[in-house]
View 1 (tube, rainbow, N blue to C red):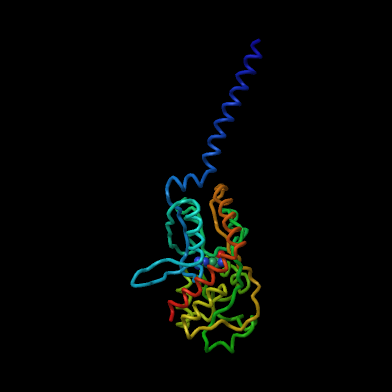
View 2: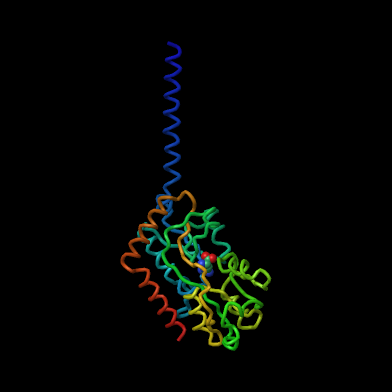
Length: 270
Ligand code: ARG
């Protein structure tokens, strides 16, 4: 009899622990509820990257715009909350997500295996190739990857471009900066000779700077996919984001947003 009683106590204990765990588990996984209770979706981005994200100054007012921002706004609308944007250097984005200062990162971020050790990634929403930006006067001199062996480079800290340069040109002078705009200034003022950059963004910087061009160099072969970074364990948010990306892709909306933002950027230059 005593044994039966002990077994019964044990069973009810297991049951109780089980229920308790389930509660903790469900509370932890409902990131969407947490965002909706706060009424705000916190986005971290690095707004030096037109047409993905950049500062548009209109009528003396500074606003962060771009197709990444449009996607973030669509997610916020879908969750029924306000969008709050933190503009950080690219190397500050993953720390902001990991420490809970941001709910997601949308910043043309490539879902690398190394990053995936600390954050989760959504499906890819856009893919782009990399190009080399040089001064127009050097254009004829730099026309093949081999001609780039002894040049100095500028790049953005902790990007896939920085990693590619460090791997392929280990003996070159590679200046890593917080923002692409600083890399552009270094190129214009002769501190460096080249920048490796994603094509869409390079096209925008070249349009704004008549002394710069995209070098006529064969394809670099770097893969520059973009995905949305979400904190590990925020699975409901990740699923929701993937649902939204899927429907945006199906309706060709990402492409439309890309074109709209490129036009917005062009209008702002002229
Ligand atoms: N795709 C590259 C990477 O993930 C560069 C992204 C830079 N993004 C930006 N908004 N500055 O490393």
